[in-house]
Length: 199
Image 1 (cartoon, rainbow, N blue to C red):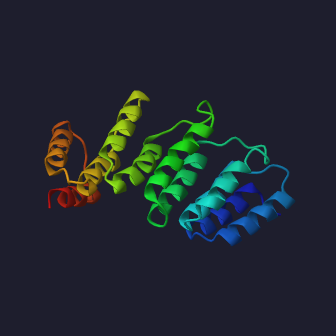
Image 2 (image 1 turned 180 degrees about the vertical axis):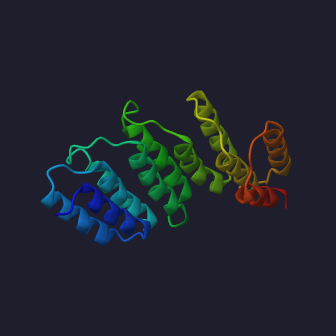
């Protein structure tokens, strides 16, 4: 008889493909066959929604956690935020950015430990809007919470500089130089964003 691990692995594999209907079907099968629902499997369904760019369904599954007697964790939040942020190209990006932060405010901070991934997702839609002020606001909030900035956060700053109206090449160059001087790591995404900001 399949156990929680078996169901979790299967649902996780389906989630990696963004196959929401199949992930939901097997999750329902797990609910019928097992007394306890696995948090990892539930998060995998949310992740499937994110891969499929289905923000509405991701929020639905986040809301179902209490019904399943599960407590949302960082993975639950990050997968839902990712689904929302991925929709920024399909709907008004500012609306998405606001909703992403609104979702964080709805959840109990005592149950959810935001991390560097959370802030990368929060910054992404603002960066794509060229809204450096909001990216910097989140950067400060991140540091206040004791989360160490990563290359993905520098990418957000540089991308915001590139998309700002007018563009901010001097700010981008200075932030990059300060980051490297402080020993920060970079990657191809950072270099690409820097190039875009300086062009």
